[in-house]
Length: 544
Image (cartoon, rainbow, N blue to C red; front, side, top):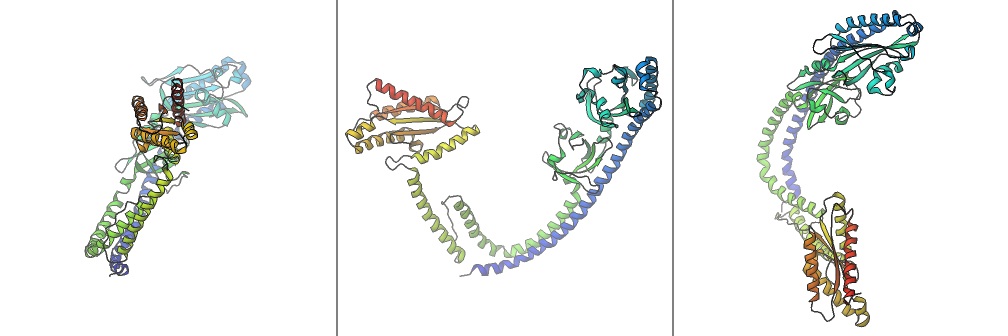
């Protein structure tokens, strides 16, 4: 008899395959490090370059607003004069309006510019709001927003005014859609202070599409693209609209939940089933520019190199596999059978079949395993019979009922239940026990159980009390329930027994629209059974 040890010695020959795998693995590892480093440099370099271009654009916008703000401060006399001299106020605003016009016309993407004087100074709405006509391109005066009509907390309508004053510094507002002029825009607003006193704000709105067109022009590899996120890394614009339509957050899909910017690192995430690699750069307006490409495209050269390494390794390995396959195949088959049998065994399935006929330790183990499974199967069947079968009637007992009703309860919770319940109560058991003895009473119980098994099926019938039975029926409608109940009553009435046999029965079908639990169906069936019992008494039926 050749031992397992001898066979293992033969398998040592396959170490050559392992050696080939190790050598190939080292090659793959080195290539992966090299290609990953190069791809990180490519993504980060492009992202840095494009972010700098965007920041230059944003810087020009900031410069335009800063010029307006500085001019407003330098040419301002006093708050008292603004409040008391309307001619001075209008002259002051006209100068700012003219300067703003010059700045806006030289600022790419500008769609509005404005100056608002603090209402605490003038007591009313003073300033100007100039909007570019989308058709002609000319700037025209527009109606001022009534600051008194909105709460300072109303960010949507007056955040542009209160936020820079509260923060006491120039701020970029997050992109938003301006319903008044029908443009999706971003705003840069600066507070105007003179000698520590807030005078007003100056700002400029930029057509957001001016930035998005630049972002959409970014491309790399085959399908790589650029996109913008807000300060929380939620995508606000992407050429791939599906990535921004649901406010996708990179932190929700990224491999790293706490993304920290690193000029030499790229971040991986998976979205809509596609693995991506991205580089991020913070922009002057608090948003992030991201440059992303599918991992498959980035790793294309790496995958090609890996493929060559794997193919060479496979060719070498196949040579040795061919030599050892005849020996290994015969040994592996019984091991697989034992493994499959062990898994079934662990799941409680003792119907296992092992055909191993080797004359070694594996064959002996397989034979012993089969014998053990047969014995356990026999013992488990016997134990289950004792645990779940009523010894008197042979139907399922109360333990089986609790087990199976628990399964139905879970189905009710999941919304997948479809069942009906019948409750059966044997009439006159106590009287027969008292007058004729428990032997006759047992005949009565056995008659009811036998009839229920015949009509409803033994697998559906449970003895849950001394003279009470329950029937659980899957996928059974109300009409079928009534038919079975009538058949049960008729069959029991004609049951040949030494004592008079009768029983009350009630049924109920689960309705997911009105029954919130298993118990609700059980109560309805129980109530119908008691109603039937009362009717049987009223007809002088022999009922308990």
